[in-house]
Amino acid sequence: MSDLAIAANGLRKSYGEKTVLDGVDLAVPEGTIFALLGPNGAGKTTAVKILSTLISPDGGEISVGGHDLVTEGPAVRAAIGVTGQFSAVDGLITGEENMLLMADLHHLSRREGRRTAAELLARFDLAEAAGKPASTYSGGMKRRLDIAMTLVGSPRIIFLDEPTTGLDPRSRHNMWQIIRQLVADGVTVFLTTQYLEEADELADRIAVLNHGRIAAEGTAEQLKRLVPGGHVQLRFTDPAAYRHAAAALPDANRDDEGLTLQVASDGSQRQLRAVLDRLDSAGVEADELTVHTPDLDDVFFALTSQPASQSTEVVR
Image (cartoon, rainbow, N blue to C red; front, side, top):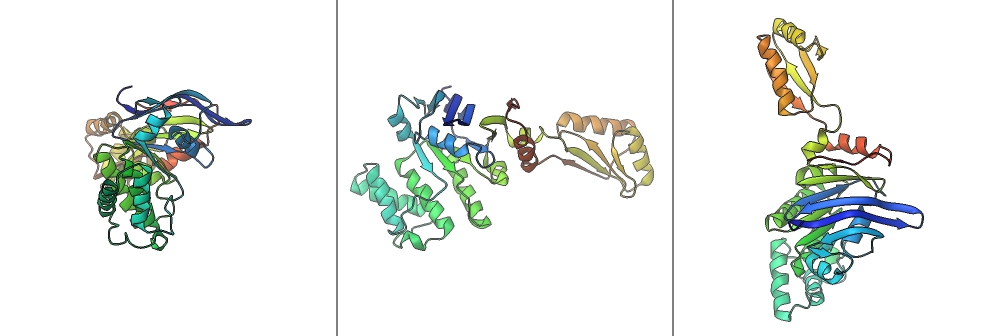
């Protein structure tokens, strides 16, 4: 467990009779991006609030930054930074003043605070706008300032709760670059997001939360293999070669007009090799071969449509 930035076993939280988190297990290695997906109301924000000590769990063993969440709260807070769904930026003061306020909250000296603020504003391409009221910033600039403020205390673990909600595509891609750089610098990022493309692009591991439980966990590619719909598509230009291939692959879906075959596959090397071996045995070579796997949208819809009693599937 020593190499885990976040570890939770049996995390539980209820509000009255409503169970929000029902025995959630998490294991987030240091220096990685972990994405928590789930529909609205699945408990993502509640999980972030608990792991960042904003609210207390009802049960479970939880460690963040090597510290027990319940008994070592101050040590946990010293190790983490949090950027919530809604901006913590004060629009009435300048970007620099927002940074200096955070420096004061972290008890940095005036000199150290100004140095840290200047470095982070420059790093996030906000130096030119530092003297302007934050209310004049674009959505992307406010989000960058939000994360810069989070980094004032040099946290080892950062919780990003839907950090790109409402941003345009260019600002979203810029934010992805910032997140990747944070991890390259050794920071662990715990990310919740509604954008499946975002999780696919960024996350080392992904967990899907449904009805307060983890429905599945693994890498993006591993999760895509959990749902049906993957296939190998073979296209031919020679009708005779197409007929021989169809005979060698009797289970394939045929498109006689387009001279294409679709063979169900999970996208693994083993299944692809089996298809190619059967073509080789028939002395046939396809003119074009493509492998299609389900995307995270397919995974998300398949897993979140399952009942709460569905067992967790962790893919190694």
